[in-house]
Image (cartoon, rainbow, N blue to C red; front, side, top):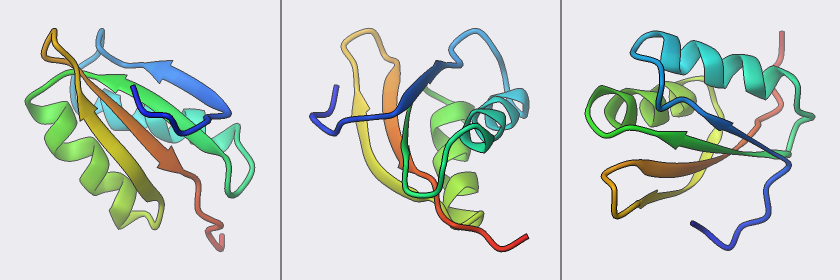
Length: 83
């Protein structure tokens, strides 16, 4: 896991795409701009799609690390998005 301090965390290893991104998006809605969310996710579609979708929405992916069990930990900073 990264040394970056986070404000919240979510484990989406029990859901599949496209619900993975939906869960992350909902978790980000609870945070203020600039706060950081740690996301625990599976390899395959989730690690391929979630970081890309977050970047497409303007959020900053600060780190991605692979765990020994094949899962990943992602840290994203919520961007200030104009509604």
